[in-house]
Length: 294
Image 1 (cartoon, one colour):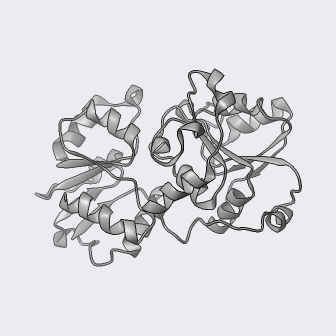
Image 2: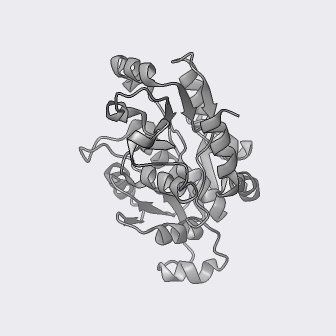
């Protein structure tokens, strides 16, 4: 039985709830009945009880520049082996440990993101007609409300908008002030939905003409899977899971923006790859490889 330690925040909670939905017989909230501990967020290592139980530590992403060496030493001591969610995370992790690394994207909940065929009616519902809609649904600003979250590349996102004629930007989530300020300085129209339900996010993905991932460092991001399942046109910097899901022609190098003129979405390619990670089918492979090392 698995005892899970995770952060009760939006993304982590959604992923764990999806896993629990299909694995009610594999986890316990009673640590005395556990045979393994799944440390789903590595920075919560201090919450791991001092017990003689194997610990599987999931690494979503690590920013080497922000790494606390003493904290990492503690994580290394308690971890039996690591779970990496993407190729880029694995690359970094290999520099930091000699322990076993199992690379597995997290299972996707089939009820969260889906393709909605009638775009015209959906766009009218949200008050749009012929605008060119570009989406960004992830945090871009630090908690101080003004400093850009550099690893998310909000400065890159704003530069890329200059490549499009009269874009209209849709933003969701918390801490979006840096991009909002940038949009207002550029005179670009935008819609910002801070608090939003899952069904609304799915609708917004479905009305977009383009989603841009401009990050410098990522574990996922989850938006790549979500766009793929909604058949939303998406382009991305080569971070996290991007090279595993998106076509090479949909990736750009944020260090060399000259290649951006050649980048283009490939909806079918992304969809075919993303559906491979849908629960419950993929959940079987995920559990066998992560918890039983087979």
